[in-house]
Amino acid sequence: MPDEAPDYLVVNRAWWDERAPLHAGPGSTYDLDDFRRHPDRLHAIELAEVGDVAGKRLLHLQCHIGTDTLSWAGRGADVVGADFSAPALEVARGLARDLGLDDRARFVGSDVYRLPEVLDGAFDVVFASWGAIAWLPDVARWFRVAAHFIAPGGIVYLADGHPTTWIFDEYAATPADLRVTYPYFTTDAPLVYVGPDETGSYAVPDAATAHNATHEWVHPLGAIVQAAIDAGLVVEMLHEHQAVPWPVFPFLLRGDDGLYRMPDDAPSFPLAFSIRARKPAG
Picture 1 (cartoon, rainbow, N blue to C red):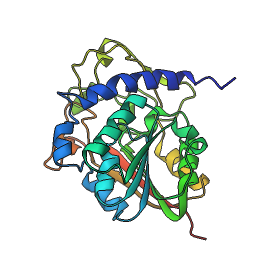
Picture 2: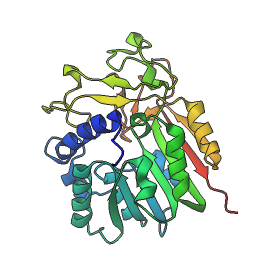
Picture 3: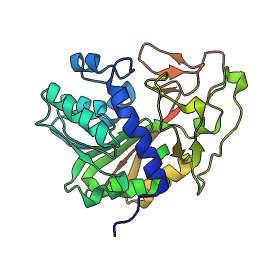
Picture 4: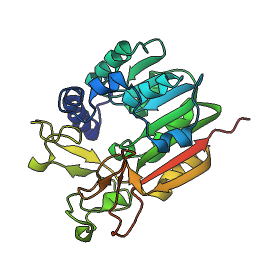
């Protein structure tokens, strides 16, 4: 008898399965019509820190509808996107066909922890970004999976919201209203978000949705770095950023680069982090 999926996986997959078609549809901030015209959604942070990918093999973990995956393909990488949501992968494959990138981009359905059971091969870059690890209970296991797929000399790159941001009330109207609401350190039980205020999604806030519960975890920065080390990787870069690609708090201000920052007169703290770790060549 196959293992039953953990409750968090069932709950979170239902959330993403319902939202993938909404993210691909009208009114979504993903704006796929615009993406088809200008198929590059990567930010300066990732581009500077990952570097040139032309001719490289890149695995994108938790790729959702594939816009970042295909952005890397457009920059010359041979890419594989992996995600646990079948509706999201259906959108991603359609985008690849529309852009004429289906010869350099393929998509694989799997829970990230079980990906080694369904995907073979080694990659020069394993990439994930912006809202990836909060959905998972074990960041050490995530890095072991990433390290499994890296060729000697290759890199694992992760950019995500800083764990400091997750401790605050996300509905604070001003910086002065910020208050510590959630734990900084990882808990065994997930943080369960559900209720009338959790309908819709970050990309289609006003959408009517039925599956509104999510199970999430905070992973402190020290645990993230240690997870990379314990996976046999050499950490060569850890950056904290005062900008993030989405409005974590409603009072953040969007800059010309598409990133959101604290108002100038507010105290600063990191909104995002990025880490790059390399697999030893020998």
